Length: 166
Image 1: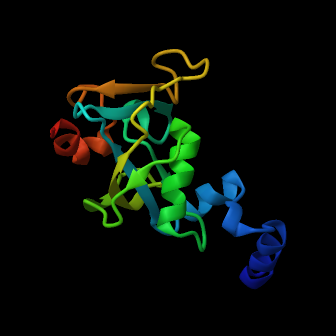
Image 2: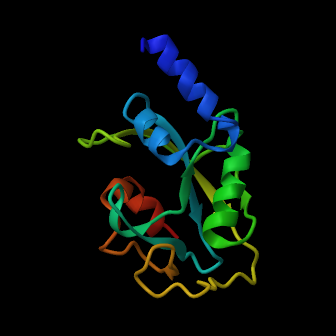
């Protein structure tokens, strides 16, 4: 099978790339092209930062700023709200202009190159992380932090100064 036939076969298996890609295909694509993602810097009135615990083979184990990878033809604004809904359970208000952008190139082959946009966000005043049955230090566990924790995932060290600012 030549490359064009392979491409046609792959396209026939992917019904709607705007809804995301099959996981293994997404990982393959991430070995060929940079990924674009949004990260949400969520602060409360006391200046604390909302972080989530992560434990996977790509981000390793530690605290991270909620974020997500932009889908094909998806606007950044939509991905911001999808990340908020999926990772913290509520809509956020956000500044339209990112406060930082970074190109991240890692030694790993899969998910080794990304371009990240950091957006300053706010949750409703009465927001309390519910953690719906998630135990502390399990993936997705949310916690407010007064300062940047020592166990921040390595790739988010670029955000340490934002987490520490009041």
